[in-house]
Length: 330
Image (cartoon, rainbow, N blue to C red):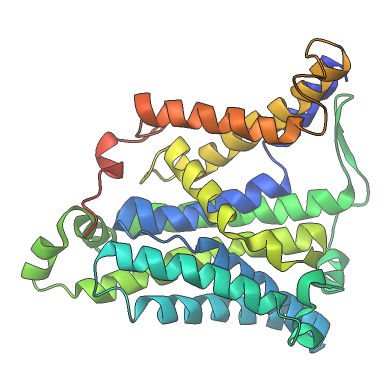
């Protein structure tokens, strides 16, 4: 593999559908963690509910595509209410415990053999994206140079995805500069002080949980539509931890932090995963030390090591403020 191909693969990761999905998910998580101080470890559940809401509505029940979009968003709102009502009056660690459990419950629910008639079980669902691709205005692939290429389907998903990213960033920008946003950020700093001013802290936290969940759930649509399939293990617990990595990498409580963090995260991962196999094949890395099948896991180790060093020497991320990640855990 030549350097031009390696660079091409890495640059594709800056704008492709996977990066967009993680950016949308991280934008929602940034509302929870960065701005409100909510320790939500179940963000993947919101994406799973939205993705399966769309897939089941269309593939299982034969309803129109746009009804599926509405069902997925409604599911994200209901999930936020179910998670928030019993926990938001308690300390932050209770929300963390409940949400990480909820993410696994949602994954196992969609994976259940007894419900496979509707959810597809561990195989997931397909045949729900035809109406979406029928709206595709692109008739040919896009080639940038000699190594970067996107076919018409990828272009359509990426176009819709970047529009959703722009809308989500604008919503967060406007919300956090409104009186509502100032209350949200004050809750993160000292919710007792906010409560003493007569504000309903639980209500504001619930609104934040719903907003972040809905924005994050848009990433579930992008994942489902880009693959034209949904599978429950896609929305595992590690998905949420990747999102936390992206939020902290870009800078918590920064409007563009999740987008920049997602781009950096996937660029580094794609670059390392392309360089290591090439170095092994070329003989620069001996096979007794590492084989090409082990390169992917080692790539995650290197990225993880880099992120650990980032947290040690710059815990606020690339563009963040150190105060934004110093929560008191109440």
